[in-house]
Length: 225
Image (cartoon, rainbow, N blue to C red):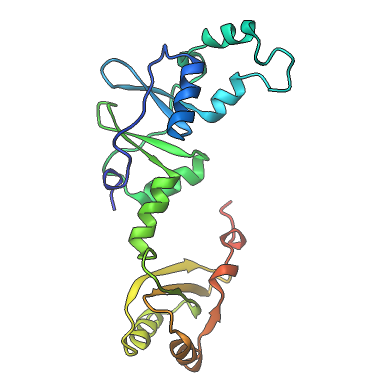
């Protein structure tokens, strides 16, 4: 799935001269945490995050937090002063898998989407990604997620799929993940039924080990050096 099918296209933006106070009010009004900064030609020139705002705003514990002098000082701080001037961006034809990896690697909560001329086309947030993967994996429909541990050998996935379809059970999706034992893989079929007792017994009888998806921790996978 491409980013342009999942991104938010109606983006709340600000200009470089927008004040910190205005930016904070926009975030509160629209319940967002990222404001792309664009020029008059809609070219992306930066991004302001809620973290940027917090860093530039005094603590509420300070005596002068809400004083007239402090409000006047804040009104003179503009987006230009606090924005990240080289934000990480995506192109519309990036995939949501690309976006997920970039968000994980760069530790950001949203990515502006720009065209080849750096014109803002949209923004993709973690919330957008969650919605996209919910659709891709079919988990918006009622069903049950199974966890199956298999040997890393050709044919196991087909064998599992065949065993399930023989029971006239429909799939929402099938996810295959790495395991900390390099000789194994974890298979997670999402089945569009809540009646899974029979298929679970069948899989065990076929020699597979069932695992609890709720206890699956990707953090236990080996980290790349």
